[in-house]
Image 1 (cartoon, rainbow, N blue to C red):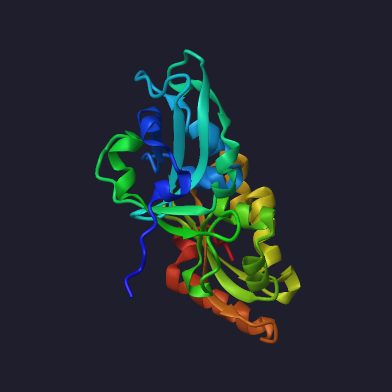
Image 2 (image 1 turned 180 degrees about the vertical axis):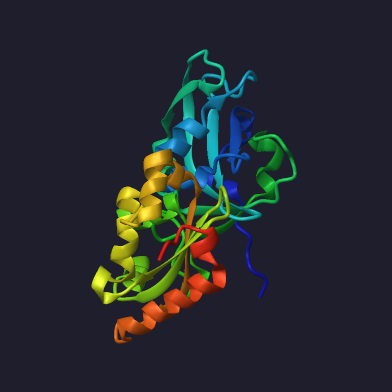
Amino acid sequence: MQQHIIKINDLLHFQQQDLENVKIRFNQWNGSQNPMEDYKRNPDLVNNDWLFWRTKTRFFYVGQIVICLLKLSEDNWLLTTIKKVTKELGKYNGVNYEGEELEEYKQYFGRVIIKYHKTQQAMGIYYKKIYNNMEVQQILPTIYDGQDFEGYDKVKLSYQQLENILSKGKRDWIAALENQKAVYLITDKQNGKLYVGSATSDNGMLLQRWKNYISNGHGANKELIKLVNEKGIQYVKNNFQYSILENYNAKIDDKIILKRESWWKEILQTRKFGYNKN
């Protein structure tokens, strides 16, 4: 049986006479900032700041309906809000508009994933030009709040991603980390330096260990303390990535984890070239 394709307008039901008044803004990595990280911290950063940002080109006009989409993957976009522009602020290189959310669509915000292969370079496209090519890929049961835990071997988190997971208490991640011992890796993406650490019962397992890094940027490690003192915690927030080299259940002796930590320090030469000093 052929599966019925649901198009975006099957959900939104814009009438033919209204299509001229609707525009879509596509938000994605711009070379320096990732709107997904902003969305996971605070959806309004995307639903207002990214949506209504303007350079010298006029993007919207008062009375226009604007659809905000956020890139999830190559052809998948998350519908985050739909607003009607109520005011133009006259700013350049800043948030230039104000708008009010359309209540009739609120049930879809953060839940509808749209499949669309974007070939245009423009961030803004009129709805009438592309809506017939936009398929509803999925309607999530709850509002999207970041990636799900997919396995210890696939953990690769920025500071912002880890902070978001911990602050929101994402259950799958918390369950995976709270009783887990591990040898982990911190990567400074700015200079390539590495730090190898271990999570054992003595330091509160992996969840608590990573909470310490998020709280102050250094987790009480001497070289990382020095780095934070010199460059500030914002440097850590912008450049650090957290991953797992080896994971162990809570019954494994701490001495085994510490031996494996030392082995990885030697293999990766983090005492000589990285942030490890012991």
